[in-house]
Length: 388
Image 1: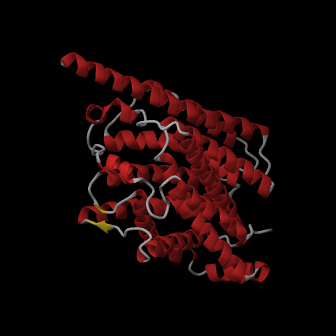
Image 2: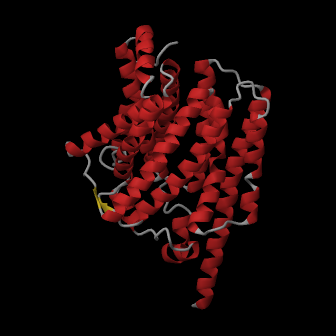
Image 3: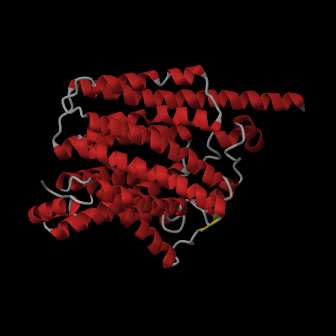
């Protein structure tokens, strides 16, 4: 088994330089100052959708003003390219680590530590303004960190128990969990047509897993748990970003704080599950690959995991929601293709067809949801004009 060589860390520098070229920095802040101001003006998560539309207008729902300049489009392309590259490389390096050291809880916890130390370095050196949380903010970050920790560790178990491609087939169900969690926690139910558009997602993933050569119940159940936990993380994160939870709470700083909490939560988990076996597994892998190689790959995988999320926020803050849905859907295709090329795990025709149906269903769901949100916003706008 070959490890990915250290020079791929060059991608990290690319993600930073593309940010600087556009006037933003993934070190300094994931959003420009104007976007931070706009973010602070967004409605509280507890407000209804209709109230949000009346306060912020239809233009906000549609993604805000559009800059059609060439540099703007090139910058967005660079963000998506860096996001895809970092995510693909994380999945590949992470799978190599789990193949060498099959201890998903411990490896996941150490990756949290790498990301937490990275964010602390930026705060300590002044490259990024350190955040200050209120009492409410500390509670919110603890809750998000819990979901992030458990969700990531569930993903690690799934990746360790089966092929990378299989994990991402199952994780294509995440929009279903997000829709359900949002409805239950926020009290906002969507049109029946939107929920109906999820049927191809569920059916496609189910067909892909049926009689799948590399099917693993452990991998399947862990990926499903990860879907639920990450849906909860998304809802709570949005609440923290729209509420007043402290000073300098940018997207990047919030993720840095969440990573620290996730690491602390993961410590008793890996001690209880792998505390007696990890050192033995590490020594066995070190005899085969060398300790320096293992440490280097562990650090690289931790940085890829952290920066992948940070660059994703940079991309999402600059594009229309539909573009985000397309990008996230296409990202899974890139991961699956890359995993097949690197690990030589063939995908059967049935799995490929089911995956195509499921991933297409994710896009259909996103487009349908966007369509009905647009109609609701236009109806609200028309009612407002008639009242005048």
